[in-house]
Image (cartoon, rainbow, N blue to C red):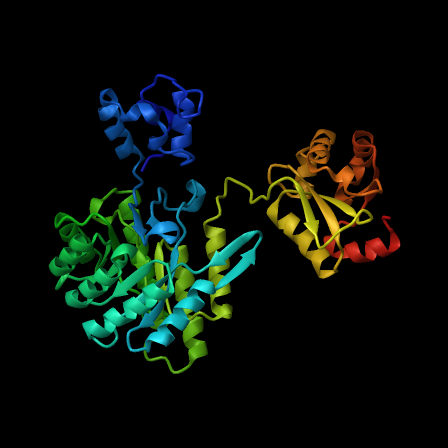
Length: 465
């Protein structure tokens, strides 16, 4: 699929430069639409009758090759798919892979609620972001619709997270879908044998549905076409998941085929999110450690090869931290440095004698400095300069740390009213601009260590107050 240009989008806009969208020109608005910084809804004239044809053309033009499917409702709903490119470096990925963790209806209600709460409460802070799990997959292990309904009810009472309801029995899924009606669960799964009845359940309850046919790309595309022809628009594809020793390479190859058919060939039947099920590693497993390791291996492979949602069993920290870190890296926009707000930050409970440090707003730099100070139990102020998200050395090379930038953060922070001393500790690699910063601030500039882990020893030799 050819990359859209601003001119392509501009032709489908009113072209009147009315500025009602908050942007000066329609051409500038077109650029923001391409980058998904704004949406067609931000253009009021498009709702006028005279521009209805343009609006239709614009919506079609901006539709990504991989359809965006919403699972869940409210603030915790997640979007699957919606991607425009095969590889992240071509643009970026927009909607991160949803991680769903299973419970089954053979468990007592209190055990279901306990596991669901553990899934919801799981979270790790990483450079200012909360890495969390996304949803719950409820499996019908008993084969009984009533038991499944009780499990769905227990889960919905315990969480607002999105749900995947797992059964090949239309009657079972219908019971679950009715109980979780306001949750908009994803129904897993429609197959060549049951798709008509599953499609009826999906339409009746306004649910997205998984089309599943392991190992058969051509058959899966036909199944997808049939479900769509029945009126279901929100479809997720499952080509099957093999274990490491049972054809994982084939699984990955099929995932690549599906995504290429969607993005490069624009084949309608393939233009949907993809689901992977790494928890197959637990089938017949004799060792929980081995099963968890294999599940994590499969999940990482499917994260890297275009899966938009995964069903996983283990909630062990050692298994999920690598997955969450990998997902964070994959879905971090490569065009935009990860940054924090440029402002004054406080570590501990500093007073008028506490040291003041300067650093940049590159997220990793700031959180490294802050965590080193916290670990050393040093109450301090940190002035974070706006260097457009660049690290210290890069900022120096790009001339982003300037007297003007430092003056700006000084005036905004009010730091001069918080401390009696007039000493600012700057990173060691910025030593050459010491004089410029002293002239700009009127403070004594102290060149600190190059590595923030050396700050405690540095302060012992160079007392601030």
